[in-house]
Image (cartoon, rainbow, N blue to C red; front, side):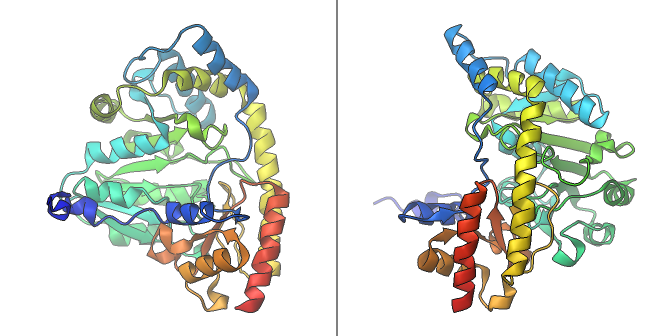
Length: 387
């Protein structure tokens, strides 16, 4: 018999499965579960976007596009970035990817060599460190805390930089905490990076979902655009998760190398999704505003409700997650989530799925109806009484 354990690449074998997917699968296996675990908007993709996709199919637009994406879409993306940030990219320096996740993947693989260190702000989206490890690099955690509103501080960053540091991954607005970095925060980070050769990978997939102020990108600070790979996409802001459409913009020397990886791995993003993306990015600002207003109402209700039932929760200002502390219960993050699911049929995600410093917290998504959220909080309150 074949010994598969000996054949599987050790770096893959040692990789932990996604903690998010584990609880998603557990919830799906049970009847009557209220899930607040998955970061997927509950809104439909705007009708005009769906209509644009239907029209493209009716017109037979089902062939490959250019590897890097349709020029019309890349031009629209460049216009969008310039409008939002004041930073100009040539369409040739933009790659249309299969979701923002592919943009993250090709950015890391294009830069990281064995032995390189990549600074990863944690808690964070689950894919960064595994991709770094698969690329032969060493992920180095920058652990943020609730006392600092889960922001990265300049002193933290400075203390972790070594002569092996190749990249800083900056994921704000943040999944899972909902934290944001203000302009002043980013200016302090930029000051630390000044004079180094460290590249920033800024994952701004939630940039359109910022509350109580405008989003600031690090590419707007000084000359940071020259050392930054900018990743964004359509999944969250436009409620287009299943369309798998994202993009990456970078200085020419970097975008050329990322494009080579994209060409060999992907060919091109789905053609029908690209036609939908053109419609979304040029015509859906009002739809985003409506969704953001609804998320904001849920956010404010949920933060107050969690604090009222005894789960301390700082006020997140971005994305659609809250990250309350469950330390008062005496349970670990995984114990809390497993018992909540098994005893009260509510699914949330343990904080340590997003890095070790997430222990003692849980992630709750408010990308669900307010009625759905209210029922879940009632059950969480009942559960806390029994702990």
